[in-house]
Image (cartoon, rainbow, N blue to C red; front, side, top):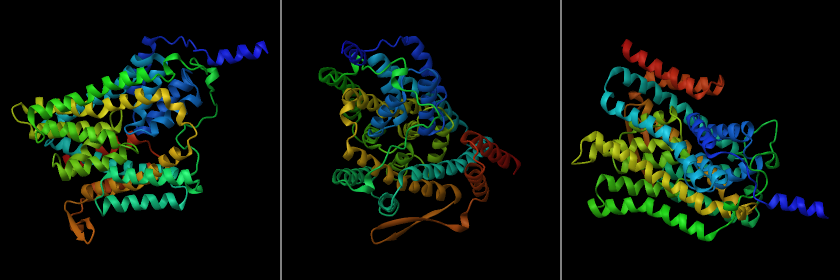
Length: 465
């Protein structure tokens, strides 16, 4: 009896993991620099380093944290870093892990954005971007296949994906409404117990050895700061809300709602609240608004920005930084264009990622209450299914604007469809895109080599002709 009591106390008592904060910072820098390949690649990097190599946390805790992050708007990999950093070293650990996850990509894309606006007309740069855009098409198509194979397990989920594609491609239904509708369908379907909304998690990394929580530095015990504390949650949430919303309010009061910086702040803040389903799904929403509603950039430039995000470390949603950079570069008044563009990039990144810290710090202490909730899990699965249709829309949208010089809208009773003008096909771009598709789907080539080869071939083509 006494031994049993000691064992129970050992499990409940906070575990001193012995991981120094300086060591953790160095590891988070390493994670950030290796975080290529989209959310799946970034999560795999964290799993390999934090679970398999360092054994700081176990498989169960890692997957539990990931499942919570999947329920939130925003980039799940960055939020997972915040969550694990918070588990290990409280608030400062979460802040450092999340900030370092974004910093390398921010600096890289900022540098590439300078090159883009200053040297974009240089033939070599045009050729590199030609190949890059063609290869990105293959990357997006691969995302459709990967997410679809995981999410579309039955006809109900396939139907949700098809409806989402029709809604956004043909009817111009806003992305947030698609997410909300899918979540409600999944929530009530799961609550009613329909078999189509049941299923296991498909996001966990696979491996031959399962590393249990009890065999890791953090152990099975729950740290004191990880226990539900309403006072701390309200206090940290209030601070983060002020950091997020105060700059927006200041811009609106100082310059009005029509100023480009005010528009950047409000648009990307709204995006931060509705970005369920990962970066590829959100890109369709951002592209639709930034290109067609605000006119900040052209479809081909949106592809250029995605190519930058694909080839630099960090979340793919960092492409929004490029959008904000170009918007301020072209529309800001009273400032040198490059200064305005830099401020636009910083503002976009700030309002995009500060909410990510808010979601984690406000909810993580209470996340245990979400475990095993059938209705919430079903809502997430329905959102993921709808996201497949949204990503397919992104692939079609990018494809027709990359492979054809002209696109025309064909109206019908409920909306309009973009149809490419077949006589304006860009044959070099088509050849590069087909080559990238063959390399990634049939030859199983990795993303970065394909992007590099396509960019080099595009540059060679432009220089030769």
